[in-house]
Length: 243
Ligand code: SAH
Image (cartoon, rainbow, N blue to C red; front, side, top):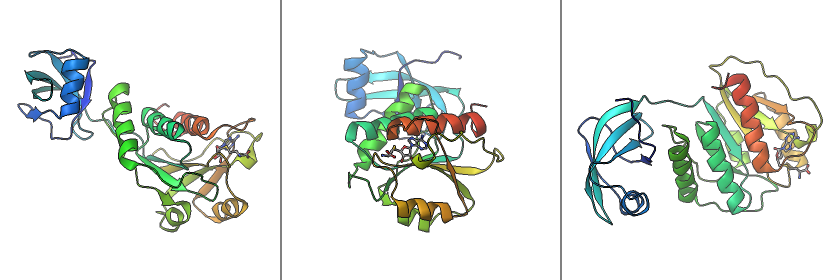
């Protein structure tokens, strides 16, 4: 069946033909109260691992429901192996970064605490929920895991050396945006700083690391959330799945 229901739901269970899934309360509420679906209607479901499947509503109540998985409508698609490291900013802007990173296609989202990061807390579950919602909305079959907040220092200390780190350095404002030379199969990460930018010692430390390449994002200083989207667009265009 080529038909794909536009209503997409992330489910935390294995997917395969004949599998029945008990819906959580918020999912039942969304499908039956908000979207007004009935028994016999179809939805698209994905779990981040098994691609997208069409599932039929078998039971529909206000607070619960059962769907039955019928056929696969899309294979599992993985994003390129690029992580986004960013310093959390204000709540809604941090949500935006997670949402946009999911849409742009990243394999992992890593909030990092830097010298000039103002917010010392994030709610991982809330950010993860944002990335699930973004995947539901953008037609993706993959949900990037969102890490707990770690310090930039500790992340760099335990860095897997074969992974390139693209350091978006606001001191390079006005320089040409680099074209990157690497093979497509390489592993990458992109680092975006907080509103206050990076401290001198962070810049020095980052530049001393072999796996780090610093880049400019053009002639204007971008806000952190804009910078994340811009950097991902540059990267996807040159090395990711946009080319
Ligand atoms: N307050 C800082 C700017 C921080 S912008 C200043 O005035 O210098 C937030 C983050 O976005 C930066 O840390 C950097 O990672 C990224 N960024 C924004 N504009 C950039 C540019 N033109 N080139 C490279 N990185 C940029």
